[in-house]
Length: 390
Ligand SMILES: C[S@@+](CC[C@H](N)C(=O)[O-])C[C@H]1O[C@@H](n2cnc3c(N)ncnc32)[C@H](O)[C@@H]1O
Picture 1: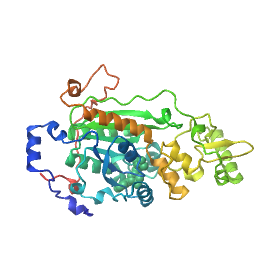
Picture 2: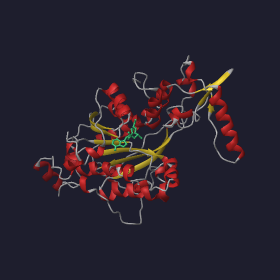
Picture 3: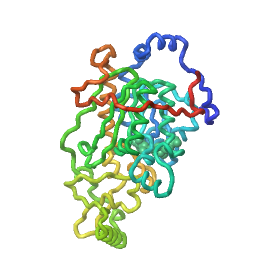
Picture 4: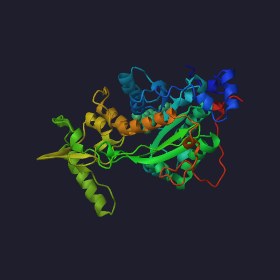
C-alpha cells in the first residue's frame, strides 16, 4: 500500500478498458452493478473505529476489503477482534490503492459538526465545519473515494446536528456533493437507537445508490429494551463513584441549576433508557450513573457500554477502561446499522430495471427524502492531491 499523498496525485484507472467502455454505454451503471454478488457485497470500512459497521455488514454476508482509522488504540481493538490492523490516516492512502468495493461505509468524524465541537471552536476563535482544515476535509476524502471507485452504494453516519449545522449549509454541501457532483441518489434519516438498545442516541444516516433506487429505511420497534437487560450482576466496586467525585458532581449540578443552566447528571435504574453515551464518559461518567442501594451511584463498566452500543459479548475489550469508554462512545449502535445494512443489501438484490427503482422522488412516500431541494449551485471543492486522472 502506498503511503504518501504524492501517490494520490495521478491515480491510475484500475478498471479495464472493457469496463470503461461498458460504463460509457451505460451511464447509470447497471452493467457495472451486475458484477456485484448482492449476497456477498464487498465493503470498505472508513473511519472504522472499533468496527461497528463491520460487524453489521458481515452479518448480511459482506466481506470487508479495506479498513482505515488512525487512532492506535482503536486499531488495537479492531485488530483484536477482526485480525487486521486498519490502515492509518486516510489522507496518506492513495485512492487507487483502495480495493474495488460495492459499498462504502463511514462514520466520518463528527467533531466539526457537533454542537459541542462547534461551540468550543467558536469560543477558541477557530473555524468549524468545512472551515476546519484538519477534520472538515475528511468528508471530501470520502467523496474522492466515491468519485474514483463508484461503489454501488454507501452508508454514512453522523451526529443528528449535522443537518442543522451552520444553518443547514454544511448538510447542503454534503448532500449536493453526493447527489449533484457525484450523481448518487441519496436518502437520509435520523434514527434513535432506543428501540434496539436501552440508550437514547439519535444519529443521522445517509444512504446512497449509484443507480436510481427506491430505498426505505428499516422500521424499528416502538418499544425498546430497558437498562436492566444489559447490567452486569456483580460489577467491580471500582466503578462506584468515590465520595469526592459524587460530592463534586452534586455541587456542580446545584451551582448550574442556581445559575439557570442545564447541567445535571443522569441517574438511572434498570427500568430506564440512558442518555447518549459520549466519548467523554471516562471523565466523570456524569451522563449515565446507575443508582445503587445504600451506596454512591456507579458508572457503567466497559462491557455494559459495549452492550449499550449493541456489541455482542464475544467482542474482545483489550484496551484500558479510558480507551474502551472513548471507543464505545464514538461508535455506531450495531443493531441499527445491521438493519440498515440488510435494507441496503435487499435493495441491491432487486434488479435496477424495476419501475420502483427508477422513481427518483415519490411525493406520497414517507421516505421521500431522495431529493433535497437546494437553491444554489454546488461547487465541488476537490483537493488537488486526491483528484482522479482525466
Ligand atoms: C466517530 S468515529 C467512528 C467510529 C466507528 N464508526 C465505530 O463504529 O467504532 C470516527 C473515527 O475516525 C477516525 N479518524 C479521524 N480522522 C481520521 C483520519 N484522518 N484518518 C483515519 N481515521 C480518522 C477517528 O480515530 C475515529 O475512530
